[in-house]
Length: 318
Image 1: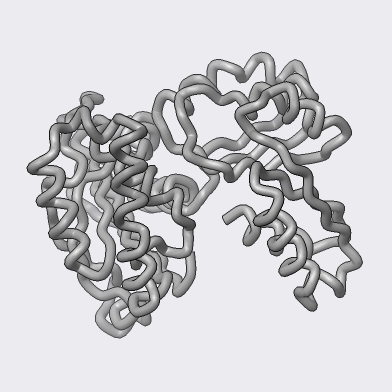
Image 2 (image 1 turned 180 degrees about the horizontal axis):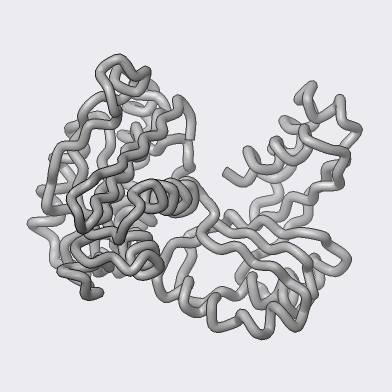
């Protein structure tokens, strides 16, 4: 995701983009690949790499001196917004990340006064979901024209969706994380990740391209924050939910069986979740060759009067 973001920035305007990461070998390989892109060469942009660990706040702060913007894509995001704090101390004008944990979001919001004093405009949760999904949900709510009762987010990714191997670890940890949603207009958290399977049509009309590309898919409850954050922002009166599904469908069955068999607390153990990620990585890599990187999202907003507005977005690559 980081390299895709860099590619987009480099091809859009003459910029100096600095890639930063822990692995120098991978960093230099990404540097070589991006420099070879015709769109990048045509803008006259500059590209360089700096080896740095985002967990080392002082090193990050030093790297940020003089920067105009920081895009933080190095997950998994925990509860502590260390890189955001470094950006504020370095007075970086623009900060963007792809975070999603509820605790992280709240900790980031608590830094609002410090960010404003430093002249830092910070945008959290700026990925696909949460991110674009939140924007679509807000648009659906605006088109309803009356108070939202229920709000449902549904997502699908084929395999890893092109998001990288770290997503396996993040997914495993998610099975031990409470799902933050609204029930009858009241915020609640329940340990239900990987359960409550439902089928979702990732299209609005059978003639839509997404009907062929994605179609109808099973999704299960997932602890992304937008069921709570967007629900609270809109003041919904009823229920919210967030569902996630994948392909091939056998993975949905395997995950469901594992969640039923493994104690929830085990998933929060870095050793257990990383071990499961390492074990499953070759299998996922194999199936990814056949299922591709398709991803899709559907948002359904229903008003207190019974009206419903839905939005669907689908793409062949994450």
